Length: 566
Ligand code: C2O
Ligand code: CU
Ligand code: CU
Image 1 (cartoon, protein in one colour):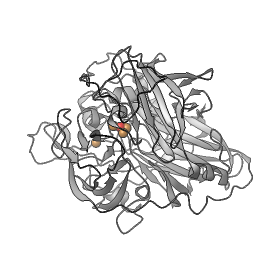
Image 2 (cartoon, rainbow, N blue to C red; image 1 turned 90 degrees about the vertical axis):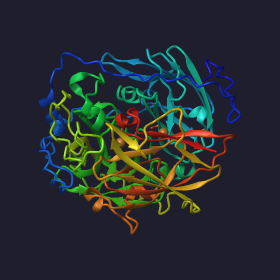
Image 3 (cartoon, helix red, strand yellow; image 1 turned 45 degrees about the horizontal axis):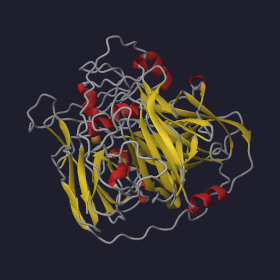
């Protein structure tokens, strides 16, 4: 990997001279912390009444959503809204070199990408670039461990993909140089050093990428959307408030995922946002390690607020789609339009995650590898786990995420145009490849395998279009399956479980978010999801990508396979 090559002369791609990959270090995080101030009650209060839900076993019907009351006092911090500098600030990155410095941030173990441009300072900047522009980024590693940045969702050659098979050692740098080949959409960048991805993302080392094109410009004009005002990204994640940002997963956490007890939106706990009575566009990323959200909006009187789904991971849908709720798994993005016009000035609305059965089930922990599965379902209560896990709020618990305070009336804004983007060209039928998600010998696996940097269990011929049939076992968990380097289409869902039943929108079992371009798809226990991937790419020579679960504990634990594309 290049070491501080001149940024003014970015290495050309794809004729980039390959240099030997450094062996990544498997870094263990076994440190335990002696004192844990339990702020459980406080955290539960913040999360809202009704957070404590009794456990239930997989297969049971989802519990009725407890009646959550709007508690205006609980939201006491203005939402961080990204501006033109500072944390998450928008930084024009197309066509000019940018330096990102991965460094410690704050006093509680945080990390951030720092940048400086045009006399402004940024932390975890939102990189903004036009479709077709070129990006040149020097990443300087000022951490005391190796890192590397991956550009999640972008079409990329392996040399620039940051897949973790070459790492940037402390005090070294790497120069990325690539063209933005994607359509407009919200993508993101995050570290990918295998075994340490979870801890580095958890501690705050990630940022957004906003790709823009003509469709995007038209949409903003039609809806008079102004980024930073009426168009706001919402990054959702959770942390364990009682342990700062220390990441010390227990055995249970490693199996089920690291769940926090405090929800953050744009790094803000207990956030509120002052809005006017008009349409707002929110582009939402789930940056949590493991938590799934069942997102919905509602008014303070409890009335649900339907919204329009404008886009998914890979950009705008062909047409806006009315929704009442959407599941958002780790790394997935949605683009939504919400109308506050019907709420009187002084009223409130909420972004919440409704209660759902998270369907966590594992074979008995000490059973033989092939023992019959038993009910070891994850207890939904915030609790100290059997192996000493920190208190946390389990997946599927109801959460109040963000309060909107309607502060003024506003002129009506027209509805979105009938057509947001061109209909995608149909894909030719491809060979079908089965991928089974399961658990054996203490580890989550794909086709019974775990990540091996020396193997390529999936080999795709140059120019191929493939259909992947991803099947998750019944005794399993939902897995957020992500492919590097390519956007795909969801063709079909079969044998979907209860939580999805009411969301199906077509005869192929698909849900609204399946209708757009995707790079991450949540596959529920017992479910089969068929996706189509066009592997044609413009890069010279064979490229290597990764297919993995974006539950970061599963990913670091090896639920990941290499994909060789000719
Ligand atoms: Cu966002 Cu390999 O991941
Ligand atoms: Cu990725
Ligand atoms: Cu998983």
